[in-house]
Length: 312
Image (cartoon, rainbow, N blue to C red):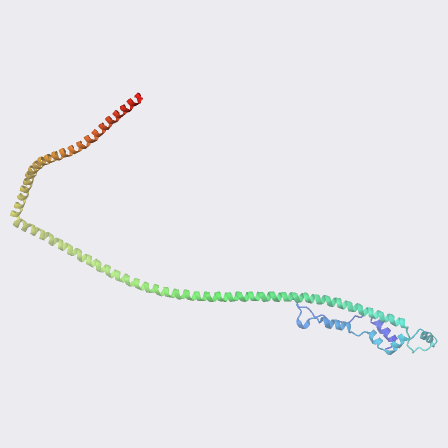
């Protein structure tokens, strides 16, 4: 490639940028699919190894020879006829070096921009990855909690079903027992009605029998009274006068026995009183004599002591 063509190509592409791989669209939830994630290393490699017109120019041997030529060649070129219009214009080595430096600065600027954008994207992807990891851990923890809750709920449901089955079985047994008791109550009520009817009939029969027996008893009593009056008249008279004589004899014997007992008791009590009075009087007299002798002895001893004291 000649220098003139390189200059035209370079001036026409001053505003061009390094082609970068397009970033994949993000999903509505902030997560990017694995197939659309940005390959950061591939982007950096694409930015650093992208071919530029400068590199293509530097590979041209004519450009390399031009850079090595001295300023003397410029003087020779001035002597050439200006009428040769088909020849390409030549450029100095300083011009090419300026172009090289400008291109390098441009490539460096784009590389820095690419690195900055790539770093920002990398940080963003790292944050998204951490957020996704945190969300995944939270989702896993939530899933475990929900699994435990589901297990507990299923166990509770199972126990509730067992309790409900037992309760239903108990209800059926109680219902059957209630029905059996109701049948027994109905049968007992029927038996009670039969017994009440029989009791009423028996009460009526007993009432009639009592009335009949009362009538027969009255008649029998009247008959027995008549027969007793006829048979027991003499016996009744003897019993009546026996009781009268017994009462009069008891009164007479009681009076006589009372008088004899009073005399014997008076004499016996008199003798017992004499003996008891003698013993009691002896005891009291001995006690009183001891007391009097004690008092007399004490007075005499007191007088003797007083006399001895007065003498001394």
